[in-house]
Structure formats: C-alpha cells, structure tokens
Image (cartoon, rainbow, N blue to C red; front, side, top):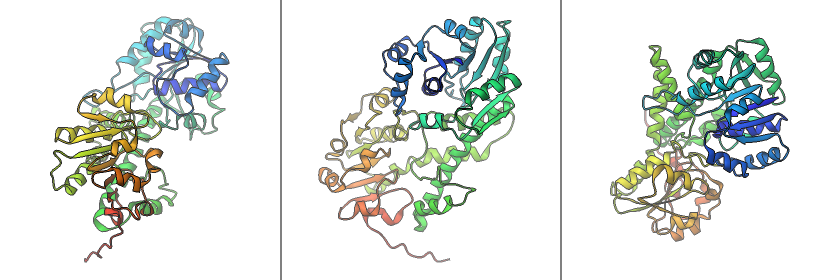
Length: 446
C-alpha cells in the first residue's frame, strides 16, 4: 500500500519505518526542514534501539522516503496517517492546533479517495470533528479512521511489529477492511469498533496503566512503614492472572510524553461532560508526590540541612532506553535541589542534551561518566535504571564519594550488592535494605 505519515515525532517516525518494513511504500512528512534533512542523511532525531538500522534498510530498498512536501506526499498515497503532536495545554486539554492544520493541509492536497487515519492521541469526538473540517474544505471522497498507538519508548520497534492488539475505529466497512489488511501481518488480535470507542480505548488503557503504577507506589510507601518488601508483594500479586506482573515496579513515579499528558487529558475530558474522575485525580496526585520521596529521604539523612551539600544524579530520562525527558522526575528533583542551595552533578548515558535543552544549562554540573558524577558527592540519587548504573562496583563507587549515601529511586540494587559496603542506602518500599543492612522490623501490636 502507499502510505503517507504526517509527523516525524516518536509515533510517526517509528510507525512510518515499521510500515515500510512490512513492504509498503511510505513517505514521512514533516514541516521541520532541519529534521527532514537529518532523516534524509540517515540520522535519527530520537533515540530508539533498532530504529536507525530499520530506517536505513528500507530507505536503501526504496520503500521509505522523507519530505517536507505534504501536498505531493498526499497525492501519491492511498492512506494518510496523522501522527502530529497533541501537547497538553495549561488546562490539561490536548492542544489540537497541529492536527487541525494538518487536516486542512491534507484537504487542500487531496486528488481522489483517501483513508485518513488519526494515530495521534486525541479527545473523544476528534475524528468526527476533523472529518467535518476536511469536508468543509474539499469535495474529494475519503473515510475517517481512528488508529490509536500503544508503543512504549525504548521498545517501540518490538511493540509495533509484535503488538498486543491493533485497534481500528471506523464507520466504513470497506475502509476498516483495508486497515485490517494493512495490519494483518502484525497480529490476529485486531479490534474493529466505532470511532469514539477507539479514541477512548487509548485514554482508558494509559489511565489504567498509570493507576497500576501509582497503586504499587502507594503499596511501597505502606511497606516502608510496616516492614514488608514491595518487590515480594508485587511478585506475589502478579501471579494472579487478573492482575499480571507488568507495571507493578515501585519507584519514583511515571513520566514521559504519554501517561502524564493522557491522564490529565482524560480528567479534562470527564470534566467537560460534567463528570469528576476522582480515581484518576488521585493517581496523578500520588505520582506527583512520589518523586519527592527522594527529597524527603535526603532531608531526613541530612536533618533538613541540604544547603551546601553536593548531590549526584544518575539518570535524567524518564525511563531507560530512551532520550525522552518530558515530565521526567529528574526535572523537579533537580530544580528543587538547586533552588535549595545544593550543588547538583548530573549524568545520563543518552538523554543529556535533551535534558539540558529542557532544563537549561545553568546551575548544574554536567558530567560525562557515572563515577565522575559521584566524585566527592555527599549523596547519590539514582533516578533512571540504566544498565550502566546497575553494573557499577559499589565498593569503587563508595571510594570516590565524600559520603557513602545512595538513594535508589528505582530499586536497582539488591542486598548482595550492598554486602561489604558502608553505604547508607534507601530504596523504595524495601525497608529491610535501608542503610545497607537487613534490619529486624518489630512486629506491629494491634
């Protein structure tokens, strides 16, 4: 099939490359000429394992192209996939300006029947509104499709090529059949539904996963008070097929471009129809507060006297295997420390440049290696579970630090890693490992 993907952000670029891998002719379009020049030169503007190799392969095979010429791309294609950004506005609502403009551009370029599929995460009712917007501009025939994406940064190629399911929202049987044929090589688990339900599936899925994360973080906080181990609790819970093992890893909360944006947007969507989504509001509140457990533990260790201390930060991306720092817990943690007179040294193996661009270059010592970051630090906070951090020799780490204090916000290290060290160690929901030694928790009296 001939496909145009509009938007070469995370979703658009990964989707376009993967559609070409399936044997389709794909043109990826973006208004950013610098980004298109980079892609045409074989460079990839985002970090995603395996993406460059797949893009190079399909460009060489003549199945994948990049352009700023939306009009020509639309005219050459039968399927148009909208994957432009819908960033949050201060109210929490999705900003629809980019998708509105892209829809108008498509309408003006159309030269015959097209299937127009929205892959961007959009509020319920958006596909119908965009359809009317296009109809007001062109008399060319087309069908609208809702095609929500469910890929995870860091494993996006795997998720796209081996999805749990494909969701297609359509009110045209023929258009739905075409989209089913396009995606059939990926999976037999294809859900065809009405457009509004498809739009809602995306928000509901992300809201539920965010809820699981906030739930296990609340359990972790209770574990710290009652002497239980959240990793063992989560493991035991996960054997229940109704619950499952995924998204039950306690830590300092979720971040990135999807969960924070989509939870806030769904709260706003509910509010727009006069419904208060109390549960999801609590999920967001718990997540926001969870990242500050790192600060609270530092303040406890130093008796509230953080000013003048040197704190090392390992990890700036919101999760490993991505350079995405949007809504990363590191942003607020570092900002708080700097504003309270702490000298912050920071390092991330991939996301340094993106973090500097978002945070600003002033007020932080940017380092090039993990041990360099920890050199002469009073405390170290591990915020992203990159493999390079998990592989560090803790005895060597201890030797370069001014004080052997480690706040493990992602539960990277185990008891055996700490044996023989003098670390003051705090993790999330594992009180028996606090201060690097196994402590006997007194039995609670009822």
